[in-house]
Image (cartoon, rainbow, N blue to C red; front, side, top):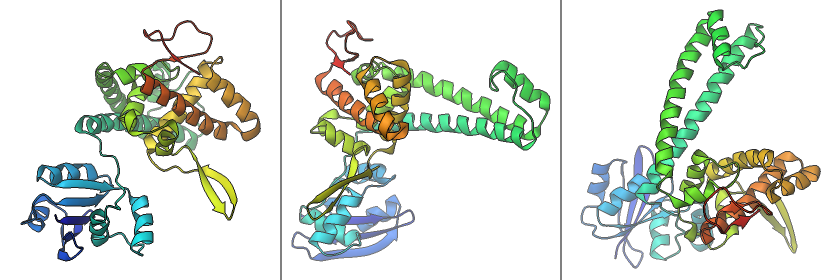
Length: 343
């Protein structure tokens, strides 16, 4: 068996081929493209290959897997920590990746299937469009402010507000309005497409029973979690979302710090968004009561983060047990199934 470490960068890749005894068979620097990688791996059959997790790791994982290799995507932070403790180096290069894989010490990241990858791309693009829309609106308000023009009593982005903006005949505002109209068209098309996709997934239907979770947010949560079975318990899911406090130890003293913010930033973001909608629309929910109680001593921002963690515990139980959300005391949830998770 041969072990390969590929330290992949945007333009160049450093590769190491190692045998089962740790002897280096080949070590080269080459361009990061398919032809160059194929050339480097000539003569290497059914090897175990390690690459680091990155934005391009998933397509390279698929490419190398199609070549007949057993591909592992390493967890960057854990890999560095293990490299420091096991082989006394803080530099994770191709040789270190190959050696850790050979020694069975390589910590691997979850690699989602093609369907989940496609769904993540769609939902994240929808997030991008929404942020672009907000940015354009802020830009228009900024142009008004620079000129000392007061906003009308009506909302600036209704039909009347739009007529007001057009009547000003300001080039920068007119240009932004044109782009905004285009972006809103794309958002509508994206939302319609996501509505159709949502009908295919039972997990999405369950998530939509949570007040504050719509189709778009349910799909984003679902695509980021992917398979609930890969998390042994709710706390592991919270760790993945980065909503657990960091722990600092000095001797026998343990201190909790800020949330780790490791893992899926997308999941962390959408959970907070859902929490704000939920607490404003579900006064009887235990989540809302938890938030209000904590907000008195910790402030609203910290309370929202803590509530998102509590919400994630509820989501874990819902998806594991296949039960919809229900506020305690209500006889029916917003979904057809009779059994429910209470919060």
